[in-house]
Length: 326
Image 1: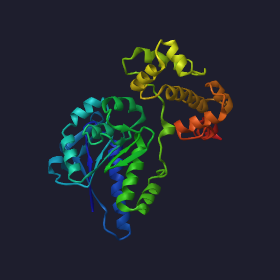
Image 2: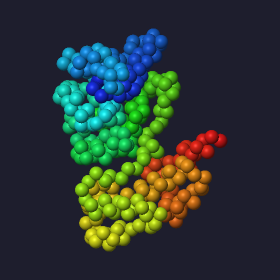
Image 3: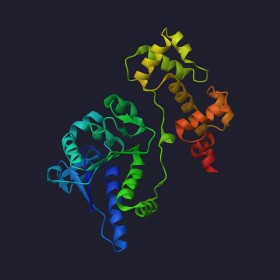
Image 4: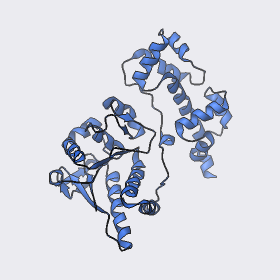
Protein backbone atom coordinates (compact mmCIF):
# COMPACT_ATOMS: atom_id res chain seq x y z
CA UNK A 1 0.00 0.00 0.00
CA UNK A 2 1.29 3.43 -0.97
CA UNK A 3 1.35 6.05 1.76
CA UNK A 4 0.22 9.42 0.42
CA UNK A 5 0.74 12.59 2.44
CA UNK A 6 -1.39 15.49 1.25
CA UNK A 7 -0.01 18.63 2.84
CA UNK A 8 -2.35 21.17 4.40
CA UNK A 9 -0.45 24.44 3.93
CA UNK A 10 -1.64 27.69 5.41
CA UNK A 11 -3.27 29.60 2.51
CA UNK A 12 -3.90 26.36 0.61
CA UNK A 13 -6.61 26.35 -2.05
CA UNK A 14 -9.21 23.93 -0.75
CA UNK A 15 -10.23 22.59 -4.17
CA UNK A 16 -6.87 21.03 -5.05
CA UNK A 17 -6.46 19.65 -1.54
CA UNK A 18 -9.87 18.00 -1.33
CA UNK A 19 -9.93 17.06 -5.02
CA UNK A 20 -6.70 15.10 -4.63
CA UNK A 21 -7.97 13.35 -1.51
CA UNK A 22 -11.20 12.41 -3.26
CA UNK A 23 -9.49 10.91 -6.29
CA UNK A 24 -7.04 8.78 -4.31
CA UNK A 25 -9.65 7.55 -1.83
CA UNK A 26 -12.10 6.79 -4.63
CA UNK A 27 -9.55 4.44 -6.17
CA UNK A 28 -9.63 2.51 -2.90
CA UNK A 29 -13.40 2.23 -3.32
CA UNK A 30 -12.93 0.94 -6.86
CA UNK A 31 -10.56 -1.72 -5.54
CA UNK A 32 -12.97 -2.63 -2.76
CA UNK A 33 -15.77 -3.09 -5.32
CA UNK A 34 -13.51 -5.58 -7.14
CA UNK A 35 -12.91 -7.48 -3.91
CA UNK A 36 -9.30 -6.32 -3.75
CA UNK A 37 -7.27 -4.53 -1.09
CA UNK A 38 -6.99 -0.71 -1.08
CA UNK A 39 -4.00 0.77 -2.90
CA UNK A 40 -3.52 3.98 -0.95
CA UNK A 41 -3.33 5.13 2.63
CA UNK A 42 -4.17 8.82 2.38
CA UNK A 43 -3.40 11.27 5.18
CA UNK A 44 -3.78 15.02 5.50
CA UNK A 45 -0.51 16.26 6.96
CA UNK A 46 -0.20 19.67 8.59
CA UNK A 47 1.83 21.97 10.79
CA UNK A 48 -1.07 22.09 13.25
CA UNK A 49 -4.15 20.00 13.99
CA UNK A 50 -6.47 22.60 12.49
CA UNK A 51 -5.70 24.84 9.51
CA UNK A 52 -8.13 27.63 8.56
CA UNK A 53 -8.42 28.29 4.82
CA UNK A 54 -10.10 30.91 2.62
CA UNK A 55 -9.92 33.59 5.29
CA UNK A 56 -11.45 31.32 7.90
CA UNK A 57 -14.43 30.18 5.81
CA UNK A 58 -13.18 26.58 6.03
CA UNK A 59 -11.10 24.66 8.54
CA UNK A 60 -9.22 21.49 7.61
CA UNK A 61 -8.57 18.96 10.35
CA UNK A 62 -5.31 17.16 9.68
CA UNK A 63 -4.80 13.47 10.30
CA UNK A 64 -1.21 13.82 11.44
CA UNK A 65 1.50 16.44 11.98
CA UNK A 66 4.68 16.46 9.90
CA UNK A 67 6.92 15.51 12.84
CA UNK A 68 4.90 12.34 13.33
CA UNK A 69 5.37 11.12 9.75
CA UNK A 70 8.42 8.89 9.70
CA UNK A 71 8.28 7.93 6.04
CA UNK A 72 5.88 8.42 3.16
CA UNK A 73 5.78 7.39 -0.51
CA UNK A 74 4.25 10.48 -2.07
CA UNK A 75 3.85 14.07 -0.88
CA UNK A 76 1.17 16.23 -2.52
CA UNK A 77 1.61 20.01 -2.24
CA UNK A 78 -1.74 21.69 -3.01
CA UNK A 79 -2.03 25.08 -4.66
CA UNK A 80 -1.46 28.07 -2.40
CA UNK A 81 -3.25 31.39 -2.51
CA UNK A 82 -2.57 35.06 -1.84
CA UNK A 83 0.77 36.87 -1.89
CA UNK A 84 3.34 34.21 -2.76
CA UNK A 85 6.26 35.27 -0.56
CA UNK A 86 3.93 35.53 2.40
CA UNK A 87 2.47 32.08 1.68
CA UNK A 88 5.95 30.55 1.48
CA UNK A 89 6.95 32.23 4.75
CA UNK A 90 3.85 30.88 6.51
CA UNK A 91 4.71 27.38 5.34
CA UNK A 92 8.51 27.44 5.62
CA UNK A 93 8.50 24.64 8.21
CA UNK A 94 7.33 22.24 5.50
CA UNK A 95 10.48 22.87 3.44
CA UNK A 96 13.13 20.94 5.45
CA UNK A 97 10.62 18.14 6.01
CA UNK A 98 9.95 17.81 2.25
CA UNK A 99 13.69 17.73 1.55
CA UNK A 100 14.23 15.10 4.25
CA UNK A 101 11.42 12.89 2.96
CA UNK A 102 12.62 13.18 -0.65
CA UNK A 103 16.12 12.10 0.39
CA UNK A 104 14.54 9.11 2.15
CA UNK A 105 12.86 8.05 -1.10
CA UNK A 106 9.54 9.91 -1.14
CA UNK A 107 8.24 11.38 -4.38
CA UNK A 108 6.86 14.92 -4.35
CA UNK A 109 4.11 16.49 -6.49
CA UNK A 110 3.13 20.17 -6.58
CA UNK A 111 -0.26 21.31 -7.84
CA UNK A 112 -0.56 24.66 -9.64
CA UNK A 113 0.94 27.40 -7.43
CA UNK A 114 2.15 24.74 -5.00
CA UNK A 115 5.16 24.76 -7.36
CA UNK A 116 6.41 27.86 -5.52
CA UNK A 117 6.64 25.90 -2.28
CA UNK A 118 8.29 22.93 -3.98
CA UNK A 119 10.78 25.20 -5.78
CA UNK A 120 11.66 26.80 -2.43
CA UNK A 121 13.19 23.47 -1.39
CA UNK A 122 15.81 23.70 -4.14
CA UNK A 123 14.89 20.21 -5.32
CA UNK A 124 13.68 21.56 -8.68
CA UNK A 125 16.91 23.34 -9.60
CA UNK A 126 17.95 22.19 -13.06
CA UNK A 127 14.69 20.31 -13.52
CA UNK A 128 11.44 20.99 -15.34
CA UNK A 129 8.44 22.50 -13.58
CA UNK A 130 4.93 23.57 -14.57
CA UNK A 131 2.71 26.04 -12.76
CA UNK A 132 -0.17 28.39 -13.49
CA UNK A 133 0.50 30.40 -16.66
CA UNK A 134 -0.54 33.59 -14.89
CA UNK A 135 2.42 33.36 -12.50
CA UNK A 136 5.22 32.41 -14.87
CA UNK A 137 6.96 35.80 -14.74
CA UNK A 138 6.99 35.81 -10.94
CA UNK A 139 8.16 32.19 -10.82
CA UNK A 140 11.05 32.82 -13.19
CA UNK A 141 12.13 35.84 -11.21
CA UNK A 142 12.10 33.91 -7.92
CA UNK A 143 13.54 30.63 -9.21
CA UNK A 144 15.82 31.28 -12.21
CA UNK A 145 17.56 27.92 -11.79
CA UNK A 146 14.35 25.97 -12.42
CA UNK A 147 13.48 25.03 -16.01
CA UNK A 148 9.93 26.40 -16.16
CA UNK A 149 7.80 24.85 -18.93
CA UNK A 150 4.59 26.93 -18.83
CA UNK A 151 2.95 25.16 -21.75
CA UNK A 152 2.88 21.76 -20.04
CA UNK A 153 -0.03 20.26 -18.13
CA UNK A 154 2.39 18.28 -15.97
CA UNK A 155 6.04 17.33 -15.50
CA UNK A 156 7.60 14.11 -14.22
CA UNK A 157 11.33 14.05 -13.46
CA UNK A 158 13.37 12.21 -10.81
CA UNK A 159 10.38 11.56 -8.58
CA UNK A 160 9.33 15.21 -8.71
CA UNK A 161 6.03 16.14 -10.34
CA UNK A 162 4.23 19.40 -11.04
CA UNK A 163 1.00 20.47 -12.71
CA UNK A 164 -0.06 23.54 -14.67
CA UNK A 165 -2.81 26.00 -13.84
CA UNK A 166 -5.86 25.40 -11.68
CA UNK A 167 -7.69 22.16 -12.57
CA UNK A 168 -4.70 20.80 -14.48
CA UNK A 169 -3.87 19.13 -11.18
CA UNK A 170 -6.54 16.54 -11.99
CA UNK A 171 -4.46 15.28 -14.90
CA UNK A 172 -1.41 14.95 -12.68
CA UNK A 173 -3.36 13.00 -10.06
CA UNK A 174 -4.62 10.66 -12.80
CA UNK A 175 -1.00 10.23 -13.94
CA UNK A 176 -0.01 9.25 -10.41
CA UNK A 177 -2.99 6.89 -10.08
CA UNK A 178 -1.92 5.20 -13.31
CA UNK A 179 1.62 4.86 -12.02
CA UNK A 180 0.64 3.40 -8.66
CA UNK A 181 -2.63 1.58 -9.40
CA UNK A 182 -2.61 0.92 -13.14
CA UNK A 183 -4.13 2.36 -16.30
CA UNK A 184 -7.55 0.77 -15.74
CA UNK A 185 -7.95 2.59 -12.42
CA UNK A 186 -6.86 5.88 -13.97
CA UNK A 187 -9.33 5.51 -16.84
CA UNK A 188 -12.13 4.58 -14.43
CA UNK A 189 -11.36 7.61 -12.25
CA UNK A 190 -11.31 9.85 -15.34
CA UNK A 191 -14.75 8.58 -16.35
CA UNK A 192 -16.30 8.86 -12.89
CA UNK A 193 -14.95 12.39 -12.33
CA UNK A 194 -15.42 13.46 -16.00
CA UNK A 195 -11.76 14.40 -16.51
CA UNK A 196 -10.27 14.69 -20.00
CA UNK A 197 -7.45 12.22 -19.56
CA UNK A 198 -5.69 12.94 -22.86
CA UNK A 199 -4.82 16.58 -22.16
CA UNK A 200 -1.09 17.27 -22.46
CA UNK A 201 -0.82 21.04 -22.87
CA UNK A 202 -2.24 24.15 -21.22
CA UNK A 203 -1.07 26.31 -24.15
CA UNK A 204 -4.63 27.02 -25.39
CA UNK A 205 -5.44 28.60 -22.02
CA UNK A 206 -2.39 30.85 -21.74
CA UNK A 207 -2.98 34.59 -22.01
CA UNK A 208 0.35 36.16 -22.95
CA UNK A 209 1.43 38.77 -20.45
CA UNK A 210 4.61 40.56 -21.48
CA UNK A 211 7.27 40.51 -18.79
CA UNK A 212 7.76 44.15 -17.82
CA UNK A 213 8.89 43.67 -14.23
CA UNK A 214 12.47 44.64 -15.05
CA UNK A 215 14.57 47.80 -15.01
CA UNK A 216 15.78 47.88 -18.62
CA UNK A 217 13.93 50.94 -19.91
CA UNK A 218 14.97 50.67 -23.60
CA UNK A 219 13.68 47.08 -23.63
CA UNK A 220 10.39 48.23 -22.06
CA UNK A 221 10.05 50.84 -24.78
CA UNK A 222 10.72 48.19 -27.43
CA UNK A 223 8.03 45.99 -25.87
CA UNK A 224 5.55 48.85 -25.87
CA UNK A 225 6.37 49.64 -29.51
CA UNK A 226 5.73 46.01 -30.49
CA UNK A 227 2.43 45.93 -28.59
CA UNK A 228 1.25 49.20 -30.14
CA UNK A 229 2.30 48.33 -33.69
CA UNK A 230 1.51 44.61 -33.79
CA UNK A 231 -0.26 44.99 -37.14
CA UNK A 232 3.00 46.02 -38.85
CA UNK A 233 5.93 43.91 -39.96
CA UNK A 234 8.47 44.59 -37.21
CA UNK A 235 12.10 43.48 -37.49
CA UNK A 236 14.87 43.24 -34.92
CA UNK A 237 17.02 45.63 -36.96
CA UNK A 238 14.18 48.16 -37.03
CA UNK A 239 13.85 48.04 -33.24
CA UNK A 240 17.60 48.25 -32.70
CA UNK A 241 17.82 51.32 -34.94
CA UNK A 242 14.76 52.97 -33.38
CA UNK A 243 16.11 52.65 -29.85
CA UNK A 244 19.76 53.34 -30.74
CA UNK A 245 21.07 49.91 -29.78
CA UNK A 246 23.19 47.35 -31.56
CA UNK A 247 21.24 44.33 -32.75
CA UNK A 248 23.21 41.85 -30.63
CA UNK A 249 22.95 44.06 -27.57
CA UNK A 250 19.18 44.42 -28.01
CA UNK A 251 18.71 40.68 -28.46
CA UNK A 252 20.82 39.86 -25.40
CA UNK A 253 19.12 42.44 -23.15
CA UNK A 254 15.63 41.60 -24.45
CA UNK A 255 16.06 37.88 -23.73
CA UNK A 256 17.45 38.56 -20.27
CA UNK A 257 14.61 40.94 -19.36
CA UNK A 258 11.61 39.13 -20.89
CA UNK A 259 12.68 35.47 -21.21
CA UNK A 260 11.68 35.72 -24.89
CA UNK A 261 13.75 36.54 -27.94
CA UNK A 262 12.62 39.65 -29.80
CA UNK A 263 11.12 37.50 -32.55
CA UNK A 264 9.29 35.29 -30.03
CA UNK A 265 7.87 38.37 -28.32
CA UNK A 266 6.62 39.81 -31.61
CA UNK A 267 5.00 36.48 -32.47
CA UNK A 268 3.36 36.11 -29.07
CA UNK A 269 1.90 39.63 -29.16
CA UNK A 270 0.48 39.08 -32.65
CA UNK A 271 -0.96 35.65 -31.79
CA UNK A 272 -2.51 36.97 -28.56
CA UNK A 273 -4.37 39.63 -30.56
CA UNK A 274 -5.41 36.98 -33.09
CA UNK A 275 -6.71 34.72 -30.29
CA UNK A 276 -8.91 37.49 -28.92
CA UNK A 277 -10.24 38.20 -32.40
CA UNK A 278 -11.04 34.51 -32.97
CA UNK A 279 -12.89 34.47 -29.65
CA UNK A 280 -15.04 37.54 -30.25
CA UNK A 281 -15.38 38.35 -33.96
CA UNK A 282 -16.96 36.77 -37.05
CA UNK A 283 -13.86 37.42 -39.17
CA UNK A 284 -12.35 34.51 -41.06
CA UNK A 285 -8.80 33.24 -40.63
CA UNK A 286 -7.31 35.26 -43.47
CA UNK A 287 -8.88 38.51 -42.26
CA UNK A 288 -7.50 38.03 -38.76
CA UNK A 289 -4.14 36.96 -40.15
CA UNK A 290 -3.86 40.22 -42.11
CA UNK A 291 -5.07 42.24 -39.11
CA UNK A 292 -2.10 41.09 -37.03
CA UNK A 293 0.47 41.64 -39.76
CA UNK A 294 0.87 38.22 -41.36
CA UNK A 295 0.70 37.77 -45.13
CA UNK A 296 1.89 34.15 -45.29
CA UNK A 297 -0.92 31.75 -44.40
CA UNK A 298 1.43 28.82 -43.69
CA UNK A 299 3.65 30.92 -41.41
CA UNK A 300 0.63 32.19 -39.50
CA UNK A 301 -0.86 28.72 -39.01
CA UNK A 302 2.50 27.26 -37.98
CA UNK A 303 3.20 30.01 -35.45
CA UNK A 304 -0.35 29.94 -34.09
CA UNK A 305 -0.23 26.20 -33.47
CA UNK A 306 3.26 26.37 -31.97
CA UNK A 307 2.09 28.92 -29.40
CA UNK A 308 -1.44 27.70 -28.63
CA UNK A 309 -1.22 23.99 -29.39
CA UNK A 310 -4.25 24.36 -31.70
CA UNK A 311 -4.71 25.34 -35.33
CA UNK A 312 -6.54 28.66 -35.92
CA UNK A 313 -9.76 26.88 -36.91
CA UNK A 314 -9.55 24.53 -33.92
CA UNK A 315 -9.08 27.52 -31.63
CA UNK A 316 -12.00 29.42 -33.16
CA UNK A 317 -14.28 26.38 -32.94
CA UNK A 318 -13.32 25.86 -29.30
CA UNK A 319 -13.58 29.40 -27.97
CA UNK A 320 -15.82 31.50 -30.21
CA UNK A 321 -19.18 31.93 -28.52
CA UNK A 322 -21.17 31.98 -31.78
CA UNK A 323 -19.50 28.78 -32.99
CA UNK A 324 -20.04 27.05 -29.64
CA UNK A 325 -23.73 28.03 -29.63
CA UNK A 326 -24.41 26.39 -32.99
